[in-house]
Structures are given as structure tokens and as C-alpha cells.
Length: 332
Image 1: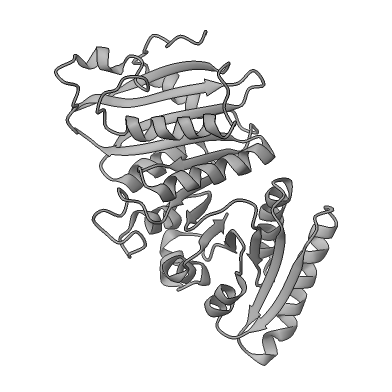
Image 2: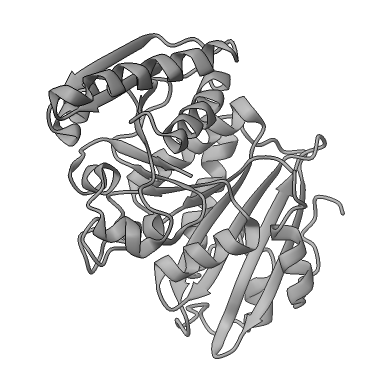
């Protein structure tokens, strides 16, 4: 395939084959774009992580099914061709094009990358699902996905299932995803994705690269696995790593001390440096927020193994998602 636009293939198997890499492949990041500045900052952060670990990145815009195609009377088939290049008011295409341009501007993509576009018919919708993929000579891939769905969260979760992404990043101040609801309200897109996604989810607020990760642990085996998983990625991306454990009652202090010691030892075995570690007492959410300082992300583990358990447990993770003015990463 050369750099010219590929012939569009209305073949569902080809589309799915291009979006679901073989098991054991590169780390995969899914970024939800909605046209807001927060979502574009999320994309820049995804590129920052991707550069450190050689990740593939998918840019996703979800639009309602049966949205009219404003192409000035142009036939749908023609409008699909060179979709990211036309100056047409195609739903979501301007958002995806801006995302692609950002990746070029910051040097994450190059002009010599191979390109192809694939479409899939969607019943009742004139445009359907569309994917444009760019692949560099070394094999790294960037995908632009325009996906049709009844709701944004359904589209995001469906794309995660197709692409087996390791991390979903959503901007918390999105104009589109938060148009009808507050973004982190009970019925919000972000909360539904956090509750139901099988992978890690980063809800981005004021997200900046390079300020480090504040990893919070309660000493459980699941929390220790979370510490190692996130710290391994953060370290490769040159993000400073800090550890925090919070206890509520005096009798829990020893547990908090052991949680930090176990986490530091696990990271030391992997030659991962910890720049700061703290043990605090009090309300976990309050103490975590007071410890954030200038770090990029608060990192927490999930509570519960099902969406219902996560919702009703009133976990620290969910409380942070509701109340934190900073980015929160829930690691799975």
C-alpha cells in the first residue's frame, strides 16, 4: 500500500482485523476526542506515553447513528474518499483531522507513514464506521476511528472490545461528552466507561506531561500489582514516581507502613526509582488531594470485580473521579 488513499473496502472482517491486533502485540492506547481542548491535551499525553513505550494509538470520535451527512449534495461514496482531506463538514472528521495534525506537529507521526482507509456499512446511517490507519516502517500504528453508536460510552466500550486497548484516556471537560450531563455525573459517559471498561481508564483534567505519578496503595495484593504496572510505564516515560498510603484509624498504621515498604521493594527489584513516599492518616480522598502538588496523575486501583460492586462500594477511586480537580488513572 502506498501513500495514496486506499480504495475503500466495505468489509467488516478487514476493519476488525486492522483494529484488533494479535495478542502480545504493542501497548494500545485509545483516546476519546470530542473537539474540546482537554481531549487534545489528552492526545498529547497519549503521545508522550506512546513515545516512551512504543505504543499504538487510536483516536476515536463517536457520533450518533443516522446523523445527517452534510456534504453539499455530494454522493456518499465520493464523500468517503480521502475523508480526512476533504474540507467538508463531515461529522467528526474535523476533530480527527486536528488530532492527526497535532501528532504531526509534535513529531509523533511522519510523512512517510503508509496509509489506508476502511469503511464498514452501518444500517440506517449513510456514512457508517470509518477507520484511517497510518503505519510507520517499524510497525507502529496510528488509527483514526469515526464510530457510529447510540451513545458515546457504548461507542467507546465497543471500540475497546474490538481493539483490546490497554488504556482509555478521556478528557473530563469535553464539550461533546458532557453536553447533556455533567461529565462526571452519575449517568455520565466517563463514569460508565470507568465502571464497565476491562482496561485502565485515565480521566484527564489539566493534564500535563512529565510531572509524575502519585501512586496510591492500600497494601492489598491487587494494589501492589497496580503499583508495579503503572510504575513500569511511568518510569519508561521518565515520569517521576511517588507513593502514598493513607490509614483512617491508628491500628491501621502498620498496614500503611507495610504497604509502602512492599511497594518500594517491588519497584527496587525492577530498578525503578521512587522519588518520594508518604504515609498519612485521615480521609483517603482528602489526603490524596492534598498530596498531589504538581504531579500529572493520581493513580489508584479498582475496587470490586464487577461494575455493580465498583458503583456501590463508594470506593476511593470513584470518589476521586467525582471530586478531584486533577487527572485520575484507574488501573486494571
